[in-house]
Image (cartoon, rainbow, N blue to C red):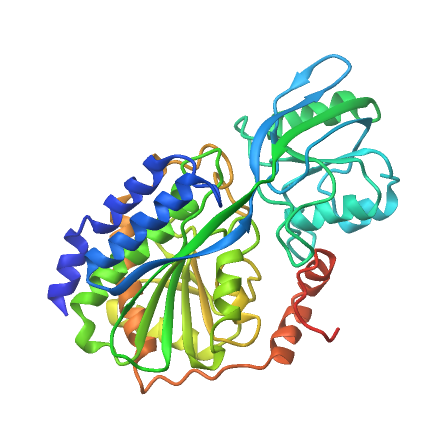
Length: 438
C-alpha cells in the first residue's frame, strides 16, 4: 500500500493538470476553451495509463456573453449577464425582494417590474433556494428582468445559468448578477424607482463533449469516476471545477498503479456543459445501462477545505464504504445522508443509481468564491489535492470490490427522499422534477 500512497503524494500530475485548465482561461460550455480543456483531460487520462481515452462530442445550444449594464436615475452600475438568459433592454420599476423567498414573491406584485433578489437564504428558512428557482418565480410573476445580488462581500458579481433545465436551454427574461455592495445600493437608493437593465448576448449552435477513458478489468458492471471540465467564462474556474477534474486525473494515475486490485471496471468521465444544465452527464445517462453502473464517485468543487465531504443520497452502503476508508487511513471523511440534485451524478442518481457527490467540508453556506471572478488557483493547495486523491483512490477501489454490494433504489424511493427534504418544491418550480408521478 505504501508505494502508491507515496507516489501519489509526490505526484504533480493532478496539480499540473489544474494549472493547464486554469491557464486556458475561458472554459465556458461550447466555446474553444472548453474544447481545449476536454482534449487536455483526455490526454491526461491517456498519460495516466487509462485505455481508450477519447472525447465524445455532442451538439450544444451555445451562449456567448456580450455587454450588460444597469442604469438608474443617478448611476450606471456594474453587472454581468447570467448565462442562458436572453438579450434584452428593459426599463421598469425596481422591486427589492430581499432573499427572494417564495412568500416574498407571493406577497409582491412583480408584473412588468425588475426583480432584485440576493443569493442567500435566511437561517430560519427550512431549505436552500437555488438561483434558478428565484428566477422562475420572477418569470411566473410576469417580471420584466431579474437582478441576482451576491451575498458575499467583495465587489464580486455572481454568474450562473438561468436556463438549461428540462424546461429548455434558455430562460425567458434578461438576468444579471451584481455584487453584494451593488445590490445593497440598488435596494437602498432605487427600490421603487425606474431603472434599466440591458443585456447583450449571442446564442449560436455549438459543440461540447465528454472526455472518457477506462481502467481495470473488462467487466460489464462498472464504477463511474467523474467531474466536469467546463467553467464560467468570467474566471479561471479553479475550484469549480478545475479542482474536481485535476483530482480525478490524479486518482486515475493512482488507479493505474493499482489496476490489478480493481475488481470492477472504472469509467473515468470528465463531462462538458455541466454549468448550463448537466448536458454532458444527462446524455451519458440516457445512453447508459443504469443497472450496470455499480456506483458513481462524482467530484465537484472539492478543494476548498482539506476534509472531504461526501453526500451519499441516503445510500447506507456508500456511507459505510467511506467510513471504512476513513478508519483505514485514520483520516476524517465527512458523510452527509442527503440529496443533492445538482452536478453530474444527478442524472444517474435520480433513477436510483448509488452515487457520491464529492466536495469538501465547509462551515459557510453558498458557493463562496465560486461563480465569481475570484475562483482562482491561488486559493487552492496541492497538498489538499494529493491527500484527497489518496482517499478517493482507496474509495474507488473499495466500492469496486465484488464483495461490496450496493443496492440500487427505485425512482419512487428517490422521489420520496426529495419530498422528505422539501426539495421537490424547487425542482418542480424549475422544471427539474424528472418523475411522471407527483
